[in-house]
Amino acid sequence: MKKSLRTPRQLLLQSLLTEARKTGGMTQAELAAALGKPQSFVAKYENGERRIDVIEFADITAALGVSCADLLVRLAHGTKKSPPDGENTTGREE
Image (cartoon, rainbow, N blue to C red; front, side, top):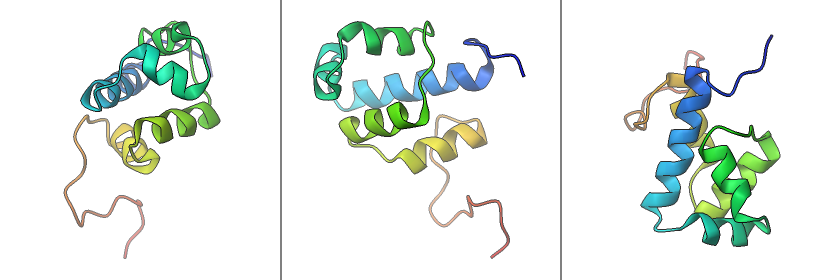
């Protein structure tokens, strides 16, 4: 599978992470400092110039104080909104 920085899911991930940072009132520089990274690290993944791995994703969401799981569910559902409370998000029958 060819890797791309411009797939719909990659663009949604960028948007979700950027929105979470802004909603939390953090600047790119503040988030980068919390991660022990340069500000350009945050700018590059938010602007689609860089992909992040799962460990970086977990570190970013922890620094933002948001749920990794919630963002992954939103990414899997292709939406910027959280699924309604009580909705089965596992893909398995209960």
